[in-house]
Picture 1 (cartoon, rainbow, N blue to C red):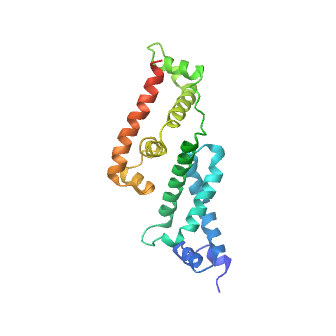
Picture 2: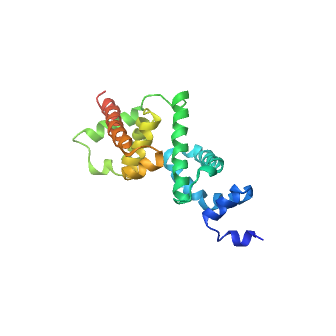
Picture 3: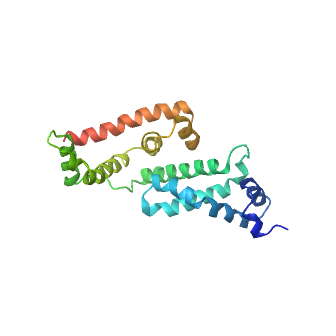
Length: 198
């Protein structure tokens, strides 16, 4: 008989097999094992206050898709790709409903951009306070990209993942990731340049 005590040492494949054979409660073992891993992925891609719900959705999708998991690869990698795609879907839903703030940058952000681009900007200004402003400006620009563009920019340029790994996580071809990452970066640059030219 299989006890909860020895299930702690079971491999992912063994747990998946039990779930597939009708022991739905065993999925909780995978949830406990990979909860922090999935949250780390999700926190990088969705607003903080949406992360828990998005991670929960990723696990629901993983549970519903267990029949498609092939034991050739690692469960962790398979789950990671589901988490990334769930983040992508989050932005796709937001993009369709236009729920994100479309307001222009605040006066404070515009002043920051002017200071950064002016020759008078000194080292101390560019340190701590500037990082926060830079992140807010970047978030503003990312919110105006399509969900596909946003995810590829985050994975390839912000997280600096190899193109092959980003393609695997997104379920896209390597060529598609290369083309879209190039185009997305140009769009992002145009958005930020447009602000600076005001």
